Image 1 (cartoon, rainbow, N blue to C red):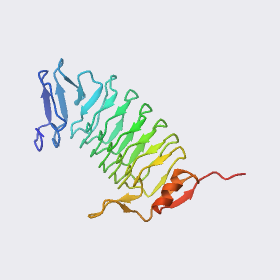
Image 2 (spheres, rainbow, N blue to C red; image 1 turned 120 degrees about the horizontal axis):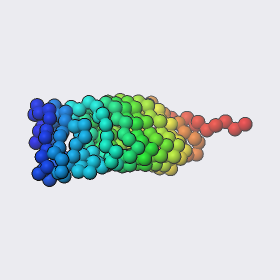
Image 3 (spheres, one colour; image 1 turned 30 degrees about the horizontal axis):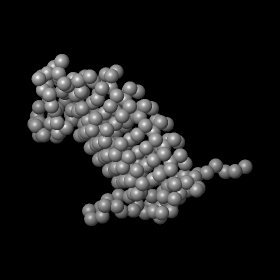
Image 4 (cartoon, rainbow, N blue to C red; image 1 turned 90 degrees about the vertical axis):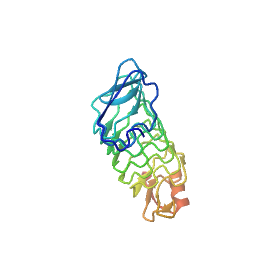
Amino acid sequence: NLFSGSDVTSVYIPATVIDISETTFENADCLTEIICEDGGDYSSVDGVLYNSDKTGIIKVPEAKTEIGEYPEELTEIYSNAFRYSSVKEVNLPESVKHFEESAFSFSKIEKITISETIKEIPEMCFYGSQNLKEVIFPETIKSIGSNAFSNCTSLENIYLPYGLENIDGAAFHCAGLKVVVIPDSVNNIGNYAFGYYSDDDIEFVKAEDFEIQGRSGTVAEEYATENGFAFIDVSPEQP
């Protein structure tokens, strides 16, 4: 935590630097830009820190409020890249194919549009992002990892696309959801994925007013029954 608590707003990284840890810029809440000298192991675009070939975002400065451009080479968002960042809206290019775990954890993101090249939301991906209100999933999403949206307390509505197959344990634990519609393409829902919150002493407390909607005979109904939640059958009426 080299810059933790400092009032530094800009950091210049010379080409001689060969290693930057994940926590180097953590809690540097005045930092708006990271600039890298050409020819080294790191690079920068629009004040954001990348690896040398610009294929992965390493760190978005915590006081940076928007990202104006992304390099065309970008394919990956590294672990903790957006951690504590002040960017409110994220629209990633189609070139991005992979998020690492905790990529957006504890960020101030309010809205994110996920590109169709993303197939999986890894564990802890948006954990603790309490300002997150809107997530636009592509139809290509197949899996949502454990605790991916845990403690996203402002997330009151979510559309889960048909084609989604797996929702791991505690994926939406302590989210702001009151109702969720689960598509019948889902074949697995992990423990405490929906409808649970924490208090001071108990990690998983059932929300008594939580409602699950889905088709009768699917894992949506099974999860609701096993956890004692209200279930609304949204199967189309037969003629």
